[in-house]
Length: 475
Ligand code: FHN
Image (tube, rainbow, N blue to C red; front, side, top):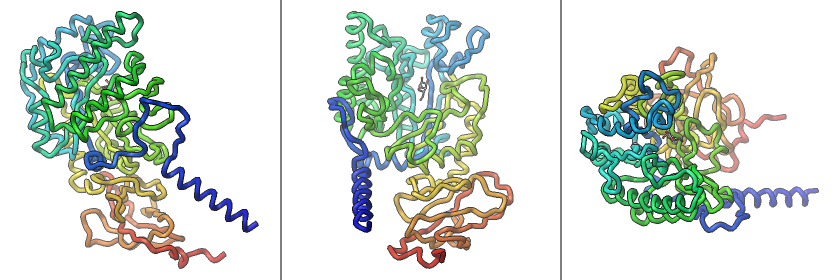
């Protein structure tokens, strides 16, 4: 019997270690699948992973109608208004003649982002409408043809970089303005046109990297159409081309498809690109949902509006809700990006500046728990989220819901001991935890109402293999 038990234990240990090093078995031979197992380990990716809070900006011609046309309100996302039957195409395509954001002050934008605590930002250089916020030499449909005339992107990159904020460029593959763009290729003429379109895309991307060499990555979108996903070889080569051109460049999983048309994850379930980019307006529930991959979640403040929409309807997320989403993302090892849609004149609506300010006020006190934070490996408790600092023994508790008893339950993993508990930013102050069971404690914080989530810092240590015996139940 003992022999069988040892054999079973050895088998389990073997299975566990192979699951850790190579959790997926490739069953399909792919030339254009994932080219890496596990996360990137270089310094650029380590930096991305430590940033945790980002600012997304959707800005373009769609900010002019702001979700309304001829007195009617569009029910979809404001940046999609061109696809609405009530909006004549030629009206939309002539909006560029009105684009004149005289109140666009990139330094002010960067200051808002800095005040919020954003460590990176993503700007729509070109959304699905095809209008370019930079003076591209490959199309006339750019800011250069508008009354504003000047480049939007260059001064933005400089202003954000000056504040220490990394810039990523959003780029839509869908381009409603380009005659050669097609969602699907039905005829040989379509295929020919689309091969010209792919050259255009490649040229524009190279142009962006050459013009704005400090950018850290591309944020691709609009890659779900058959025309794009049925040419996995092209998206694969394009990704490699861009990364050779700009070493360290970060590209999420939306760009690629494999040769079988699988997106994000190849046909062997391996992640393509540098991080999982499918978390849009939703977040993973638990650590198992992210399969050990780097990931990022992007979130709107209203339900589904990215570009400026004059009338926000439905639930509008409060700063506290966004803060909770941010810490939840950090606790699950991901980055969290909050979207803003400035008005056509270059100013932000007050609901947005208010949230940037409030989130920033919270980050000024508690940001240490977020930057460089990651999954702690502790059992999740109902009061909130654990965040481990840079793989160290310091673990933050971000408390979002205090139980009526005021007791926060903490259950440590085997062989971990609790050395010290203190409120964040007050290393001298100590809270004495009450041992309530084997490696289990109550931390008493009282139940006075709190204005926002608060943070405690746990210093933990390793008790060695023999620990845990002292408080073992004698049954
Ligand atoms: O269609 C777009 C949408 O307008 C917006 O840009 C979001 C941002 O993640 N991406 C697309 C939908 O997935």
